[in-house]
Amino acid sequence: MFCKNFSRVGTERWRKLALGALVGALWLSTGRAADQDYKSRVEPVLKTYCFDCHGDGAKKGEVAFDEYTNLAAHVADHKLWLGVWQNLETQMMPPAKKPQPSEAERNLIKHWIEREVFKLDPANPDPGRVTIRRLNREEYRNTIFDLFGVEFDTSEAFPADDSGYGFDNIGDALTISPLLMEKYLDAAREIADKVVNTGEGRIPTISMSGDQMRNKAKPSLSSKNLDFSAKMPGSRSFRLTSISSTP
Ligand code: HEC
Image (cartoon, rainbow, N blue to C red):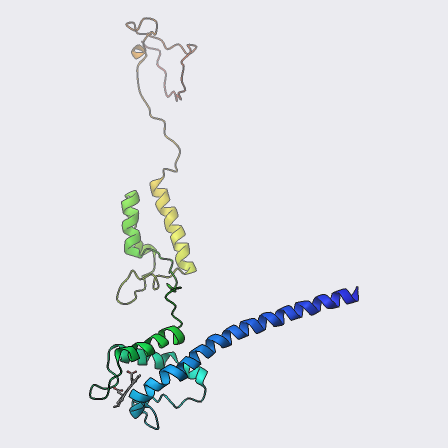
């Protein structure tokens, strides 16, 4: 019994170790690819075109490509490499009067930055996240009016919307706080009350005198007196408010 348990714990631990090693190897291999690529393909181009001002002791614009102590951290420096990508894309660097890298050399570095630094994968693009959107006050008011014909004053009922980038309909800026959620529920109730008649149903009233009643057998004759024992197919509701005995 003890042995069985022991061996189960043993295999469990081995499984975890093996899994850890596998994941670790994967991480190392991607990390190594980026580092090796940098050393073998990227750094030589930088040496040729950039080190005059960004290496061998030069540090123009606070950028030096050979001042790192940790290669992995250097390769993972997003701010630095985004700057390099932008400067290569716009051809701002190297400065115009200096020897320029060929298009292939520029592309090599840009692609390395895209693939290895920012991990962009064209075969498996990351579209980012989708913000759950809500209507702003203006949109809500108009929508309620269009759907129900109810004028609902959202500037009274809801707090002012935040804006983003100068617009008041940016999903990321239009958050829903618990307070706003409560106000939405209150608004929904108020609007529903206006739209749906929640009062008692009203029965339409008709006034008619007895001689307006017709004799069913001889419709030309008025029935004079309404016969309450007569069978009347269908379903009706009557509320009798007065009975007059005068013909
Ligand atoms: C002749 C000198 C010279 C060469 C060669 C040169 N640079 Fe620069 N670089 C500068 C100077 C000067 C600045 C600072 C400019 C500034 O801050 O306006 C700078 C700034 C930068 C910056 C930081 C500013 C920013 O926009 O982010 C980056 C990144 C950069 N260079 C990349 C490169 C790359 C990549 C190469 C080679 C392909 C290169 N530079 C070649 C002179 C040079």
